Amino acid sequence: MERLRPHTLRAYRYELAAAAADPRFAQPLDDLRLEDLEAWLARPPAAASTVGRRVATFLRFLAWASRHGLCWRNRLAERTPLRGRQGLPRPIREQHEQRALDAAIATAPPPYRLIFILLRETGMRVGEVLYLRWGDVILDAGREALRVREAKNGLERTVIVGPTATPRTLRGLRAARRALGRAPSDHDILFRSNRGTRVSYEAIHYQWAKLCQAAGLVDTSGGPRYTPHQLRHTGGSELIAQGQRVEIVQRVLGHRDIRSTLGYAELQEAQVRAPLESSPLTRRSGCVRPCAAARGARLPQSWSRAGKAAYSGLPRHRTGHRRGPACPDVRRRRRARPC
Image 1 (spheres, rainbow, N blue to C red):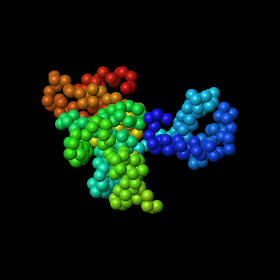
Image 2: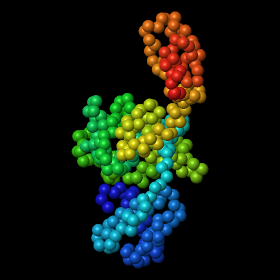
Image 3: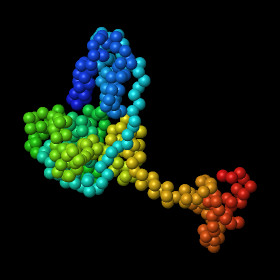
């Protein structure tokens, strides 16, 4: 169980304890039928994420049992891989909700204020922030960055911070460095609890619930309307809305597969709708490959100024060309096959 996060170990422990209490598992692992195992994995509630967690649990468990001679083969290795539904990111869309949450974050106690600022401005995962050490923090002018060593996908990366893109993050990190009063060791944990240990996931979710309560972002049952991970979704969607290239957003968020990043682009419907509605080609039926003159190419230098003015005022026919004897592209294409 190397390199597994505490919350992952808790999830695995829960699934294995539930399986141990089921009579279907009261037999040697080699006698366990694949049909029984699949029925256990798909038992209700069976959301795609829940089934995925169960499959991951038993894949690791059976692989461990096979390595230690407790079974001869991993039956789940014969199973077709789970193809769950790929959901879109769920950012915090409303501006007034974002402002209310930012105001609540500003009143949070240390070190949670800086933790939530990092999640809000950098789009990092919660685990990536909690596992930062002072050796991962670079505050030299012009080189400000955070090195993520404990990434979800195992790929180390560098998160760029700066006075323009992430001003509150940079100010908070420099203030935390000054508050130490000494040069920290590279191995010192960046975010410590009152007991001197690393801040836990439970503490993050507890403080997050208090933030949402203060911001008025609660559901009918009084629980938080959003999760801390949705700060990451919000940051990624904001980068897309700013016009950043998908490759840049992929680099910032640390996605291994660019298809994960493309989900953020799917959210920006307005960015797709505006050019489609404003394009003359989408408003007009017929050919969508106009001639060079219709595409905005420079008109021949030999044309007189009056000829150019007359050309610009001519009506267009269905292919997007302007009708008139002066257009060379029209003359060439009159006898050619339709474009």
